Length: 170
Image (cartoon, rainbow, N blue to C red; front, side, top):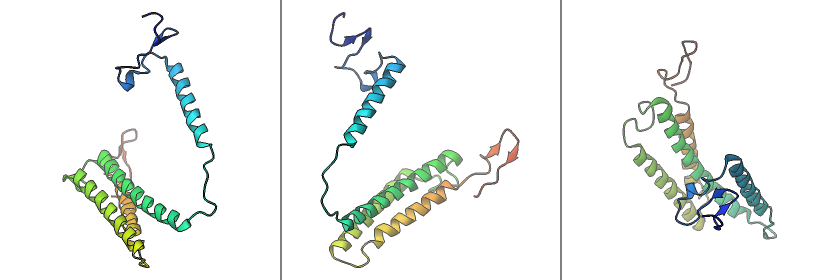
């Protein structure tokens, strides 16, 4: 349809009724790159807008939020370690071996949430050691993620170019 609002310089863009992935289908790769750069520059410009902050930040609140975010990040790191281990070596040397890996990860995520909840309750009740459940389980998850990332199977690490076995820890 010539002259329609969706046609511009030989490219047809249909906004209505199209899947999001097909929205940029009519554009060349250089045009897509330019468009993405403009969108990224706009988002970065929005981040530069100053946001008013309180005169004195509440560092205790910042510390609590950082502790809880660290526990969640350690949980995600442990899950990533398990997935990477299974991708590299198959299920045998990794967590849960041939068992239900998704169920194990869901249990780990729920337990992390419960530990964060216990820590928040302990802080509310003014216990001196309120941070221990979230920090302890976060440290455990981080250590377990490192353990999973370091597992390398000797059978899958054969260097095909030289025909030598790589020395990796089990």
